[in-house]
Image (cartoon, rainbow, N blue to C red):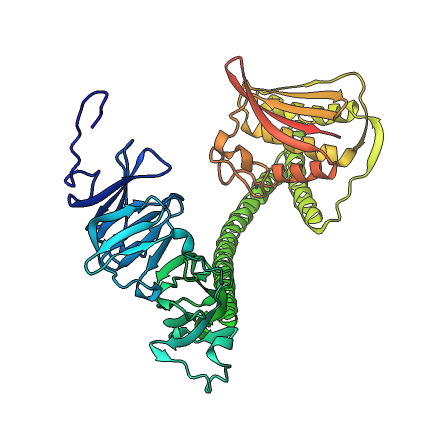
Length: 532
């Protein structure tokens, strides 16, 4: 009831605020106006008037009986309660409980409801079913003794431990106990060494490493742990004295549960060795497989390359035979005609044809010899310092007549002088092959220009033509040995010229490449010789 608002709240056990309807006694907390202490058939109820929260103290908290008939506070703020099984002293602040029964001198331990009274002299009176009790709380002495706790028995898998078989001391003198992994259900019995009023003694225990919190056991004198995993634990047990004060003497026992052999450290090391060995073997196996696969692939590629080279060489020898046959036939024919020709002009013309084709044979032979020397590593350029322009001019002039016959314009663009370190024979072979290649792919009306520029990086020589050129997708392969373009007659040329040029440029520590640019509606292919 709220006297200010005159409002009445009816609190029943069908709400979450109160667990039971049958209330027997009620007193306010001596030191907290918001707390009510209520006796019931289900134990002592702590009720907070401010928030309606409740807490119940019953057999689980060590009460001998759940029925609280009467409650009476003393001058110190403790609550005294009459029950069916004795008289209780309860500290509302610490929740500490002390039980008084016949062993303390009570003739009657079953008390009645509402039979409680504080007398004017401070004594407390409680009425019971057969008799009552009047006492002065100051006459009740506090027990200051700290009882030690002894281990009285150990059972493994519900069988008493055989001390003789294990060569152990008496059970209470055992400091450390080692058990096998299959003996991991352990029961430990204990007792406090205080013999007056043993029923007043409370126990608590814990197994550090498994359950680190204290377990309140009440009057129970046995701790049971089932299926303990392998490991090292410390069992500790503690007891109160007769007034409920915990002893400062704690009994401890080291308990070791040994693992099975397959979980021991050496077994784990063995597993790791097997695992690492398995991984190593697997990796090695995969590497060997890859090596075998790559070896097979390499052999297949080598076989394919050999077949390709064989085809190329066959085609090359066919082309070489054709290259030799053409000028030879052009030599044999005029030579036969010389027998019947009497005109000096005709003879000169036939001699010119024979000489021209003889020079072609000599050039082809020189190419084959140069290739053989390059492969043998014996072709060494002889460098001289001098003006390179006259040398290049002579080479270009040597092609004027041949170019004129095909209607091709050939020209040289160069400075007046260009002093440089170069090899005459090597430069002659390079330009001869490049210009010959340009003439081969030019038609009537096309033009060939040879440009010479001296820069800081070296001497740049460009051979530019407006001929058919080479397809873009084939340009990266033009300097390969025996390469012939798809737009070229397969019986025309031998595929040695540009590869020979590349290798001769390398001997000069130079570079050669091909590029194209679009100008005046013509595709122009440019060969650059650098770093001479």
